Structures are given as structure tokens and as C-alpha cells.
Image (cartoon, rainbow, N blue to C red; front, side, top):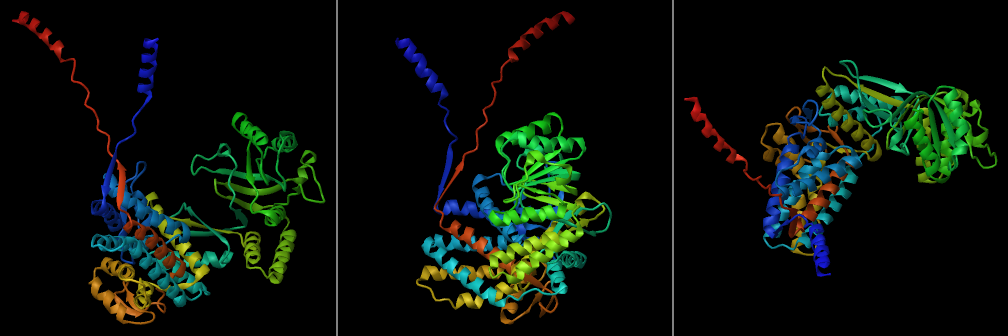
Length: 568
């Protein structure tokens, strides 16, 4: 009995595996280590800022090294050996990622701002300031700066202004600026613009009639392209239904027809339940059936309208419509729509070369325009404009050329940034560039009345941070940055330092402008994370594992060498 109990107890003991030990740091010690990581990341990213910023070369685990001036790409590549320092660096990486996701550009500015706020915030807390009040002062000052930024903003209207925004974001590359302005003029401000690798030495613009919506494949097992994790089909049939597909039997006639016609099939439905989805996946994997299922875009009435738009563009019948119940089991070849090319990723679906009748598409566009004119709701207008862009303007494809994969990759990064900047500028307008817009906010922040000394310290941290983008742009241009920033502060309006030519001038008149959304997002993201950093009092990380040395056994066998005496 006792023996059995001992055995059971020892079995439990063997199963209890202790978790990894932790390293705890407190107060100034923790903040100092995190700040080292923040500084290392910010130093690497800040060298790319401005028209005379430098490139960063990143080693990759596969292929050749990557050369880039894109702030978020540099930030993502950094992984420090010291876990304490890496924690600080990762927090600033999050700032760059958030700015990139929301505005698509301004990641370097956000990183520079975050470093400045974190450094001064740590210093003030170390001297005894209340971190919660300092953070409150920072956020109040940032809100004041953003309100003032909005007063400086002016809308973008002409193709020349669009080209200027794109040129600045592409680090002064006028060719990229003109190419993007041309693409937007072709498809309209609400049109879809995509960027691809070109096959020539020069950049090309191609406008394709098509539509894109934000729904990806329902199952990753539909993927047929190893490069890019996507589904690509040419000359594809389209099946549209307003309702859920809940049984395999309802799909069998459509699959048989597609198989007889030897064509791939795209299914767009409200949803595909597990049983029919499992059957589709099984057929895809076992017999190579060319099929992909996608959820219909939008919700409610908007979804119904978008399905009808796709039906008009592709020439398809819509199943499951209220009042005209076409059943999937009774499908005919004429009920399928047709498209020349479809590309489906996990996030979106792009339909190109729809085979719908031109007259039907024109009637549908006219109908949407009439709805747009009579609509009073901003939300409705936004959705109608999206539908109008998909039906009428098509897709512009920028094919980026170059002499090597490395060159194309570097230029693609700049084109993506420029494209995101342009969209942001169209959305919220532009302000004076070169870091000058943030300098103009300094007076508004200094005039702010706050409750206590700690909040005033927070506001002072922000006024110092607002100078940093202009400082780094000037420093990267190889001039006395502190003198340039002081002189720019004494100027007013749109007069600022143009680092490209090394002179003070009217920056708006010469095309040095930044999208308001990019500057605003960079400031909000940087202040949010960096001010939270100042409130940290304890840092917990995993201790590195100690690798045990294997025992040095097996050497005793050397005694057999004594037999060598017989050789004499």
C-alpha cells in the first residue's frame, strides 16, 4: 500500500516542471535599461529621416540583404540580445507599427517623437515628479498640438499637390510623385491602386478594370500559390448567393458544371457552413478541384447591394434574392458570372476583367450616382462612393522596375509610403512639411494653463519633442541642427528649412508638405506609448537559460596505447 503511494507521489513530482525564472528590475534601474533599447532602435530609424536621410542595410535569413529607408521596416528588423533593452525597443516598435497601420507613413517621425518623450519622461520621474501627473500633462499638451495642427491643415485638390505629397514621402523622388499622381488621376481619389514588381528597368502604370473588396478566402486550404499565400485563377466562373450555403447537395450541380466547363469557380456567399466547406476543401486537396469560397463584403443592405454590383460587373445571376427565389440546385451555365482574373488573399479579393455587359454596368453606375445625390447620411455617401469607385474607376497597378531585386524592393517601400501618404492627404488635407508644422504648435502648447507643476513638466516634455523631427532632418543634412531649429521657430507661417537645397523658404509654395493625418497619427501614437513608459516602476523579463556542459567521459580507453611498445 505504502509502496504504491510512494510510486504515485514520485510520478506526480516528475510531472511538475518549473516555469522559467524571471529577472525583476525596479525604478531607475528598469527605466535605464529600457531607455538603452529605445535609443538603439531610434538611432537606427532616425538616420532615414528627411530628404538627405541615409539607407539602412538589413541582413535577411533568406535571400540577399534588404536596403531600405522605410522606418517601420528598420524598426521591425531590430531584436536586441539583452531582454531588458529589447522590451524598450519593442514598445517603440509598436509605436511605428501603429502609425504605419493607421496612416501608412510617418513611422520615423513617430519613433523620434517617442524617444524624446520617453527620455525626458524618465528623467523627470527620476528627479521625483509624479509619473501619473506627468503623463496627464503630456496628453493635454498633445491634444492642444493636434487641435492647432487642424487649424493649419488645408485640403488637397489639384494633381500637382498630390504629386508634391507623393514626392516628399518618396524622399524627393519626383518620378514616383508624378507616377502616383497619374495613377490617382486615372482611377479617381477613391480608386484602388496596387504596387507590384515590374519586369523592366523602368516604372510602369497599368489601369485594369476591376473591383476589390475586403474579404479573404474562408479556408487557407484553397491557396494555390506558394508565393504570397494567395489564390490566383484566370478565366474564372462566379457563383453569387445572398444566403448561407448550408448543405453539400445544393453545391453539387454548380461544381459539376464548373468541372465540365474545365474552369475554376469562385463562390461568393453570406457564409459557407462547415459541412459544405469541408466538402469543398476535400475536393480541392484530393482531386485538385479549382475552387475558392469567399464571404460576401459588407453587412445588411450594403452586402446585398455589393453582391448585386458584382453580379452586374460579372454577368452573374444572384441566388437567394428575396421575392425571386432562384435555387442553387437548379443552376444553369448562364447563371454563372465570368471574370478574366481573380486574386484572393486572407484579407481581400480582387476581381479583374469582369465579363458583364457594359450597358448594364453604366446603368448601375448611374443609379448609384442618383442615390448619392439624394442621400443625406454621411455614412451612406461613403459606402455609395466606395461602390461607385469599384464599378467605374477600375484598378491602377504600379509596376516598379529596377536592375536588381534589392533595388526594386527599396523602391517599392518608398512607393508604398508615398501612396499611403497621398491617400492620407486626400482624406485630411496637408500641413507645411519638414517638421515645421510641429514647430508651429510649440507656442500653443506653451500657452496652455495646467493644474500643477508635474503637468507643466509633461507639457515641457512635449514642446521639446515637437522640435525633434526638424532637428533630425537638419542633422541628416549635415548642418548645425540646433541653430536651424531655433531660426525656424523665429519664423512664422509656412517659412521653414528646406533640407533638400539647404535654404529657408516658403515650404508650401515649393511643395514641401506633409499629410495632416500622418503628422497627427505619429504624435498621438508616440505620446500614448512613450508617456505610459514613464509610469513604469517594475520590469519583468525571462532570465536566459543556462546551458549545461555535457560530461567529459570516454577518455579512459586511451590506456590501450601501451601495446605500441611491440613496434620497437
